[in-house]
Length: 137
Image (cartoon, rainbow, N blue to C red; front, side):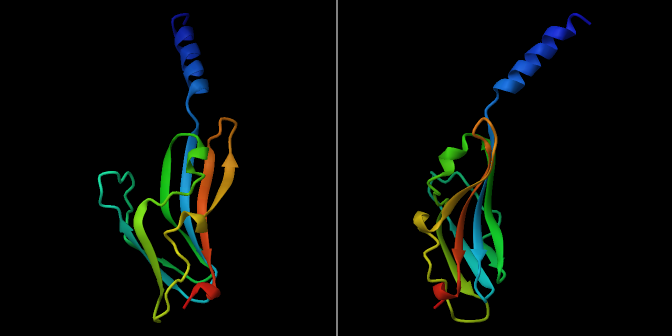
């Protein structure tokens, strides 16, 4: 029993010292009156570190879709600049010729949000873009 106590103490110390866990979501929110197809063109260069599971997403009217989710042991502050991990993103209203006029490729159109922060600067965060009827043309 005495030989197990140092092992338990070591495990507790390691658990207390681990890096914070971060969950990052890139969210597209559709507040328009149209269902919108969002197409993601992945980066093809060697710097690409993220792979999307599908290349298009249907974002129903008045709903939202997470187009990218990343998990890891980092500080959530590294996601604050809302970097785009795709080569380009475009949107078109389903069953119409309308396109999303809001630039989905511009970092400045996404808003960083801390959903939940833990004591080690880990937690859940997101970058969210919202488009409305005024962005459709």
